[in-house]
Length: 383
Ligand SMILES: [Zn+2]
Image (cartoon, rainbow, N blue to C red; front, top):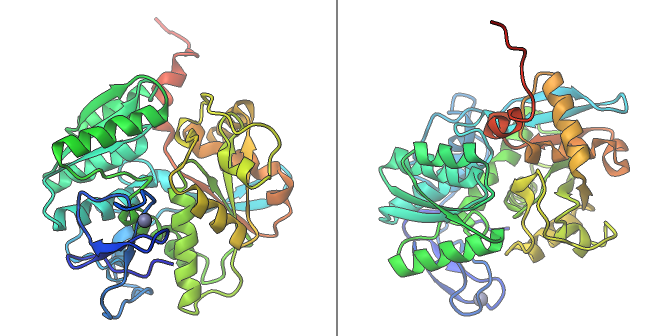
């Protein structure tokens, strides 16, 4: 567990080769071995994980824990936890992250990462994204008065690209794979000497995502469910959840650790294959779940370890199953994008259906992709 506070005196460390150095806003990977870096706890300042009832809601409810003194806020709310009918007749709890300011869970990470970079003196950032992280980073940069350049794959949803542009970001479309987009952003950040605010690499982003675990813990009255199901692409949600739960356990606030289940697309399922949980090839093909289409996540070893630690696993679902889950959710009043529906699509799998109490995280609003999907259908035209 990274127990480091943020703040201007933070230190970076590499768990791989034991490098450490002063936290630098333009550093995003280990300068010695190239592996992902973490914040290393330098100070002994006390931290408060459990807020008082009157403290604000959302990600900044845990500002003291995060060590952020000057948060950039868009008035984040606690995302709702609602009971939801599963196809087998049982009930699950749905944690609806689509209500966050830009419509996805990425706001948790972007709020903390952009706040930290601003405190470090950054005036602009470069980021790469299939859509949601770019929109979230663009919004928080706009709120902070910072510049933002977003690199997206050419296949990214038009609405997500338009959203980042609406916040004032400069959008660069990159042909090729999602990995080609990441490399283009890395090169741009290095050439311009600007922070690369990557949700796949940066530890400040993961710190922000930890708050979803704290929120769940408060909403479940300190008794977490057996199983937590969530989309798995770059792993920022799985890792943030795992680290948040580990922090709660470390503080003596957690009984049994829930099993974490990451859900991928069967067209791109590197973690499910690494875990041996799914037969077939890892793949890197296009899926309607564009947000989980990450063929080689930088933190893949950490993701595998986090899932294995609590007896969890990774599953993969097909586009037809995703579409069906998305339609079923909308028919019950919950409009979510395909990527956000992968967890609901996995509810019929034995690993989830056998749980006595499961939480399924839905990560992004259906408004993000609605324009593209509505072209395939049409309403009745009345003269
Ligand atoms: Zn290293």
